[in-house]
Length: 403
Image 1 (tube, helix red, strand yellow):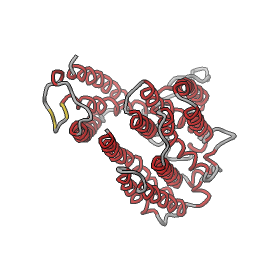
Image 2: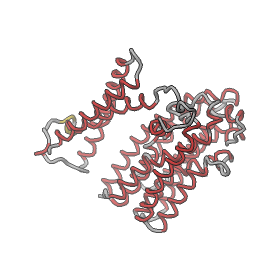
Image 3: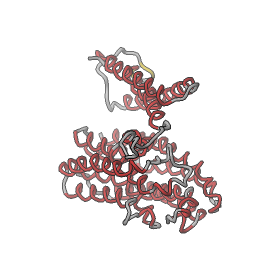
Image 4: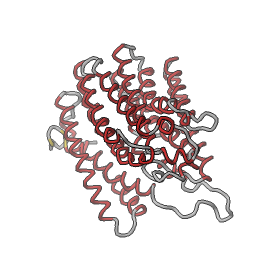
């Protein structure tokens, strides 16, 4: 089978799924706007594909068998490679519209709870827009260490892409339901409002989708992997569940949240049996500080609803202004720390700049105006994709230098 036929299979499946999802998820009169957005999204993805592919092919990180491609290229990228971003751009927006559509009725006619809508709501609760934030650190850490793609890498990447986020955010949405009712941010891209009849099923779904992966990954590694997996799983549970609720313990909340994103990288390094060097420790420390800054800044926008619900956080305790300044300081230290890592690590120091620029305008924000930081928080979500782009370029450079 040539790459062209394989690409056409992806496109055909994506078009069918995208059309079905879009029809079910969009209201009358919104179809044209939806497909216009799809076109703009594909245009952006096509540019990124052309850039990334051309760079990687130019550095001879991989190549294509000429007998399996048409020979048409954009830059150095074969035309076939653009099928995958096209498939994603067509299918995923429709899927998101379908997941976030409003539903009528949450219980059966007799008043008893049912499981209707559990899977779509669980996927929405898992924050698909943020899946990459946990899968990427694992995959990058393991791939750069082992230099090969094996079943452990594939299984681990999928685990930290979907099930892990399903547990992390799904458990949080269950135990935060009462406070989320008072939070205008919830009910979309920034968190689901899981109806009470779905709470217990959500917890069971999180358990049955996570435990098998944890066991498989543990069996694939040694003591270091067991410890890192245990810490990662504990942090996911302890952050939200009643009795622990680390999210309500100031400072510990930011430490735990950062662990959510750094631990996948540590698990990947442990499974790959990576050598522990000073440069690696500094990199992980910088990443951890970045995670603390992200959580602290994100907590500022929720000061008022958190206080109304009696929830403590680093922001409710030290106040909006000090929390914003703390976040700026943490991002600054994280960037400076990268300057002490082996080349090309220092290039990553520049990544701290857009986060600081995004956060700095709220240097003097007050508790009463804290909700305004939501604008910057939404930008933060998309800044992560730009940062991922830059980090990937640095990884490619690292790969080429050590090949």
